[in-house]
Image (cartoon, rainbow, N blue to C red; front, side, top):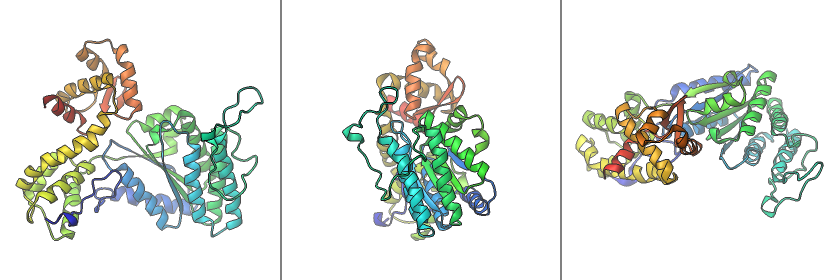
Length: 406
């Protein structure tokens, strides 16, 4: 098979040629956009799921749906070591510029508020009552907005107050232009506690006023718990959408549709073998599809082709998908994950009890808390329920057991 015509896209966040299995989510989002456009109340949307299920891809597809309706949009990726002000200001700058042609004077005023909000990030913390030290050289940063910063709006330094004022003003501009604004936040679980609290408060205010600004977040399965811990009403503030593995029919469509576009196909036995190998996880479907295409000599692709390609696909996943995450862990954290993998062999790689991990390692549970908490902060594990822990990466337990056996 011609590798140049290989249709599969196993890159991080790359949209596959066939976005299979997400039709319902796309249709529901279209309804949300239409309701907001008509002034109807709606909740912001939060996508949750394991690594490799296509949250980032779906987030991009939802943003594209908003763009098609003429909405202003912006996207950012949350990071544990970065406050929300700068990336959110950049995302809103883009969104406002997309709407500025309809009402340039009001847009300039709103950009002044965005700039004021952003510039608070460049100010060093006060060293005493009423004092403010000069910012360090690395913090002498300008947001690149060519209007004067507003005064007395979104610049108090209290992130909750500032976010409410900022998003209210931005949403007001969107309403005056007859459009809306969608802000997409990937890796949302990595927002700091104060930023989460401020964002929830702002979304609450927007929903009460019926303003057309929508936050579309994506994150790991414990993201709802992060939001709930910040504001109890977050359970009613967002519409949570759980993104999982593809059903068999959808996984087959993700493989076959791109192949048919290139005048190729799979035998039923090849599809059976691929479903066993991938379990329907979208990233694995793309990775195996790409490897199988490259080794197959002709169409239809057979189960023998899958068997030949599987070691190559596994090797690439071991380096890029699994290995890169494993290398981020300390020796103590790796020991904890290997214990989870050993216990998961009998539990189908589902959640395991933290007490079992401690017993397996011959340690007291309290002594393992630092390793477990660090793994959670790194996004490698999550707490499915109190006292239980699971990997955020599908097949990670199997990967660790294979590494131990090599």
